Length: 399
Ligand SMILES: Cc1cc2nc3c(=O)[nH]c(=O)nc-3n(C[C@H](O)[C@H](O)[C@H](O)COP(=O)(O)OP(=O)(O)OC[C@H]3O[C@@H](n4cnc5c(N)ncnc54)[C@H](O)[C@@H]3O)c2cc1C
Image (cartoon, rainbow, N blue to C red; front, side, top):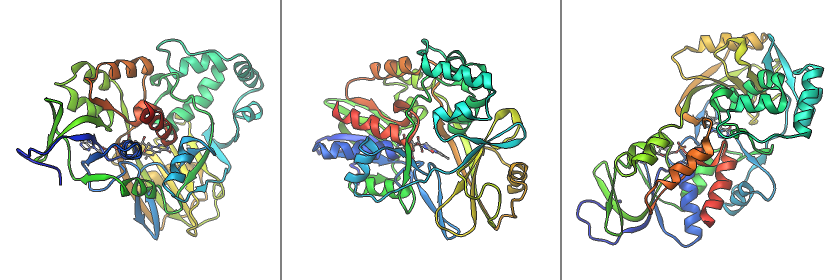
């Protein structure tokens, strides 16, 4: 149990607030370096958004279904060190819902040059952007930079699909670097992403159901309290979404807190559904819906986890719609979709960090304004995707 009240025992070397993947990873890296860290997690299970719930004879992911991976990269090193089995997710056909139909999306960047998603002139313009790359300007948004580098067609027809699909927002609101990552293979543990959280949690000194509510400076460190518990620590690492870290730092580090508060998070809901097989999307990965189609539906993934039948996962902005509304939105793109034999709605409020223009300077301001002995690690610091989080925290642990 966490120490309470007037407990005179020596301070913890490190206390990590948040038992999502960022907090568990930070603890894991520290432990490998011989540093003991205790982790406080407000919820009743480790992993944050990385959690697999049992559903309809299989699993339903609360958050990501897979993570970006390359042989020898940080994700590969981590999965192997954890001795966690994982499968490569086969590349399957994917589509864009655009101009009232499902248009095939090329599997590789260069293949866009032959894609019906762009006109011949638009493809040439994109080729010019590949051959003569331009760097983003200070504070430039992703839509403006894409337009400057790849032309108007790429900015208007391709980019909104990725911005909505990955960040549930518009490209005008995103930092120019938000999408700058090398394309990689995806992998997942056979039993679902929850196995990753469980493997990380196994070796952690993890306290569940403990929400930190206050951090105060004390001689030689910090006192953290919440829900009737209290602990002192030489270092405190906030492995929390930016808005949660902002709240805890409001009195201690007002400037860092205000800057953290500038980072917006998108809220989505996901619907898992099971149908009879035999539709046009059966063997594919799924599709993203272009915002100009005027649909609430952001995208839909086809799950291939060995369970018979067609399993879909549909993404929408968080709302209060019934399954019938989701079903109708899906049928526009999958007219031969059979009735769902089961459906499940999962909420993900404020789950997806959407870094606004000027994010690198913002991060520097946040980290520069934190008092010594306090740190912030979260997906919003290291870039979109669990692969970026793994790479970022590996580098962080070496610092
Ligand atoms: C539907 C969905 C789909 C996604 N798809 C992908 C994808 O395809 N690829 C990808 O890479 N990423 C994806 N993500 C994003 C990814 O899940 C997150 O970026 C990542 O899990 C964030 O990890 P984190 O540890 O930084 O934060 P979180 O998972 O938010 O963990 C923070 C933890 O801190 C706890 N906490 C909060 N406040 C306190 C407090 N005061 N004291 C103690 N504990 C506290 C919370 O309970 C939580 O467990 C998706 C997310 C969602 C929701």
